[in-house]
Image (tube, rainbow, N blue to C red):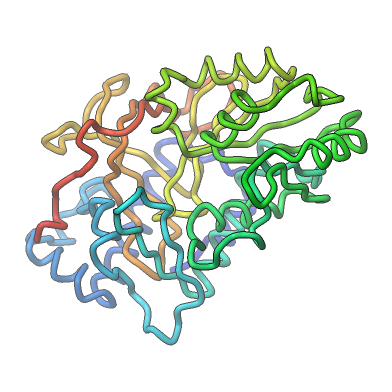
Length: 355
């Protein structure tokens, strides 16, 4: 069933509509069958929905799970002794985090696919890397979650890893200037979560204390937009402020969930849209869960080939987005290209988790 290795040999944005539809019709139904057999709760949900695989013609007709279900239940299709890693979402204060159970194969495939997607944007050379966070070794191990997992996951794309913040989450200007002195004359990588980039590089950084600019930097960031929406900070203004303050031009946003780690959606700097890869797809649904036309806002449903150890291959998120087009983006990438507009006002999608 697993042919991820074959897909990994291709450009990650090479599948056009009909080819992708053919592959996903087969693979997503195969994943559904596996999880139906191996996850009792998932099987119960499908039974309650009167799911009949014989009636399925297209992969988007396969039932989705609301993302909230991974916070409320242990959804896994593997035995406890085969759990290699457990990912937890960062969560909000007072809320339960999602729990994602991975076996070694699922974890390995996620890492390979993430590398394939990110290196398509950044290139294969590992660059000196400035991380807008504190060193994970200073963190409370009880707080190990999607944030720390992302830092470790993305750190493989860099070298000479340097952390901007000290143990008190304050900017260490000596460390920053030493890093820039050594690496500012050639390309270097900056990584962080969107809200931490905003707080530390846009708001708190005292530019008079910084001896070099970021003109040769490439910034990779994701998540954290919810906090910025309250400050009326959108993607366009975010980029403008970074350029105005520190001459940072190359900025890539990414979108994804811990529930589908690995199959992230990268923003292209030439078009400004997120793109589906060969490993993932995206569908927009209205409040009645009907599929809407392109350039219509609705709830984002994410579909991925990667989740083999848990039934996370088709998830309805609590995010609002819209598909702009497919296979004809000016950046040359095949697949759907889309925008994300933030969370629903009542970020709780009720669906088959109420079963």
